[in-house]
Amino acid sequence: MKREALVTSIVTEAAQVLRPGFSLMKVYKLFPISGDPESWKQSTFQGTLIVRASGEVSARICAHVEKTDIDLARVLVDEDSPWLNSSTVGCVEISPDGFNMHGPSEILEELG
Image (cartoon, rainbow, N blue to C red; front, side):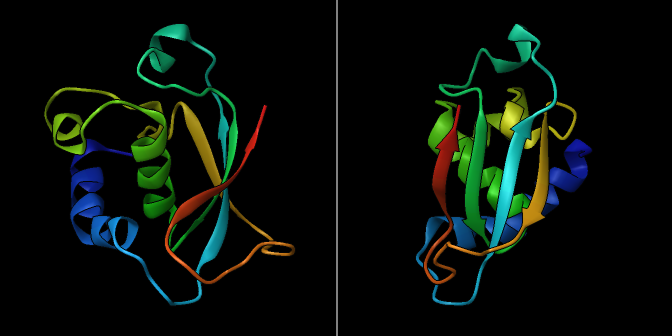
């Protein structure tokens, strides 16, 4: 995702991640594409995450907030987060079967 598009998406979707919501959400699977250690140095977790969120960008922001020590404002300036980088982490919507679809954006499960 290009930095300009990311900035626009963060501005429009960050509120959904940071405040509780009561709308029907989707479930996303975020998974590593790149195992390059340099890409992951800012993350406290390097595995697959199942995230409830309103959209892909919200899912990525949720993973970023929970699994890195990088402030979102620093990402916009000069820091790279693997969770926000589509070259490092893939993100696909998955079936919500077995997951609660109501509530705020949050990590539902960590896989390896």
